[in-house]
Image (cartoon, rainbow, N blue to C red; front, top):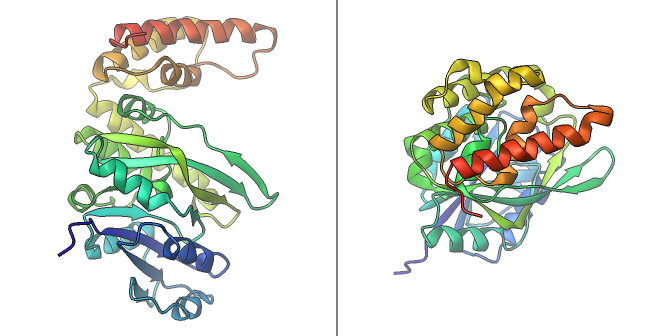
Length: 309
């Protein structure tokens, strides 16, 4: 019997007729062969089901819902049905690079992390422009950046199946369900990493859920971020936002020092990115001074957090 771990690739789909065939093909063409591809058609009203019916591959498991039940429900159904030792995500409008599964399974089998993302290309469909991602790669940096953003690209993530089965997506967190989950997993003690290699092409288009529901996404994101800071033992007044120089001295610097005490080993680059959220943009002739301030605070915070140079 083979001891090669099985990977369950999960793909929720809703009205995805334009891109889903390319997404499926990108998984079927993976260099790592030991996978199952679970696709949930979440009540699509376009040709998504007809396109799925054209694929006849024993590695594909299809689930069709007659009514749309939402992304959180779709993801949780797929996680519950997954049989693999590892779970990988790919949305129906994204494209996996051929070595994506192989790179991630090799890394996760080394036991260096429990949840693994990676670099990616962002494809802006309206213009055709492709932009390379700028990632942070270490567990401390990823944990720290959760205080201000989502440092993992959800459709590029693979992780231990037990982590996702033990911590399902939370109802009511649609549109920012991935960020909310990363925050919960971080507080639960799971280890993160991003690979330097590019894993997927992440498509950005007008019909994308996060683009359509922007205000609701922000509300859920802020609620989850507040819960994450509370879980770290950070006071409510430390919520990152643009504030004046005087308030930065009073609030932002203590925030940075406390964060680096809670999470050891944060890099200067990650601290630099976090502290920028406390500064106003468009400072004109004062920009060099705000950048110097940012660098000095970042270096101080990293030193206080025990990062060696």
